Image (cartoon, rainbow, N blue to C red):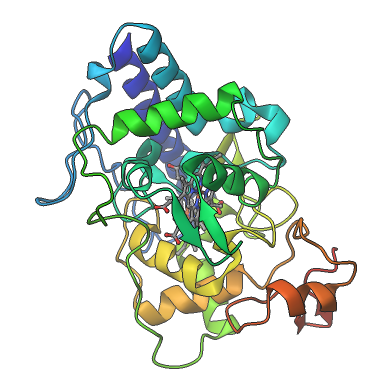
Amino acid sequence: MRLEKLQTNRSRTWTRMAMLAALLGGVGFTVAETAVVPPHTPKVGAIPKYPPGMFQPPSPTTIPDDEMGAMIRKGQRIFMHTGELAPQFVGNRLACANCHLDAGRMPDSAPMWAAFVSYPAYRSKNQHVNTLAERIQGCFTYSMNGKAPPLGDPVLVALQSYFQWLATGAEVGSKMMGSGYPKLDQPEREPDYFEGQKVYAQNCALCHGANGEGQRSSDGKQVFPPLWGPESFNWGAGMHRIGTAAAFIKANMPFSRGGLLSTQQAWDVALFMNSHERPQDPRFAGSVDATREQFHASDDSMYGRRFNGHLLGSGR
Ligand code: HEC
Ligand code: HEC
């Protein structure tokens, strides 16, 4: 039963790989650049093993068979299938696990075991100490372009139960190895849109689509998540920041081939990705200029900049 769940995740990954293979065959890409690689969990039934020294979250087979266990499983399912199981709080086609990989377990993709032991924490984004619940609400508002579940809502209870269980044995208050995204060096030259466009065409478009729209299977399931456009994260999300996206991409993309891109390529493709239109910042202050001034006044954000004759943040 519990193993079955793990295998469902794995077979989803395989579905993606199968789609990929079909695409490769059908469209006639050069296979060398985008070879089909097995997911990072090589053996069916195996628990993913992370590098030595890295925290090892428990195996899903050890989730207890009681009321608490039921809540932990519910949290895991919401994390994987957020739009289906918490639709009232989701305004796009993403799931939590699209950015926090391997169901929130993968080091260097802001894993949830590390998050669990680091809150409450001060955040400069909203200039106060945030509880873990408030941090999760933030990802619903911005990354999921949705609504924050109210405190005490079963969705928040389930997610926090899952994270606590993932952190079994972790040291409270420690800055754990593999937490957040690894800090990325500055690029050697300014990130460049056209260089990024080339990186995108060669390394990303196959899965995420020529227009960043992602891909759905024939039954409507999102197989590869959208990177921009109306169904992606909004202008207030951390991932819209060029530096944050570059760090995530360098460590985790192309999927299962993290580390493939050079630092420069990661910055270039992050700039390219984040120079496209996406849903409005929910903190919109009446005009794009005012919103840029208040929340986006840095080189790290393309919001409010004019590009190809279009004012980013003004909609399509
Ligand atoms: C579009 C990508 C994206 C999606 C989808 C997303 N997040 Fe995040 N999340 C981020 C980014 C970016 C950060 C900040 C990571 C960093 O800079 O270290 C983050 C941080 C977090 C943190 C704090 C991590 C830490 O170590 O401080 C939590 C908790 C979290 N997200 C939970 C969620 C939950 C729950 C969902 C689904 C409801 C979700 N996220 C969906 C991108 C995303
Ligand atoms: C082999 C297919 C594949 C390739 C190639 C690939 N990705 Fe992804 N990408 C994925 C999958 C799958 C996820 C979601 C992970 C999950 O749910 O486990 C993802 C997630 C993401 C996310 C976070 C979710 C979102 O929609 O915002 C970003 C950003 C991203 N990819 C950027 C890139 C970039 C940039 C490249 C090229 C350098 C790239 N990806 C190449 C499959 C791919």
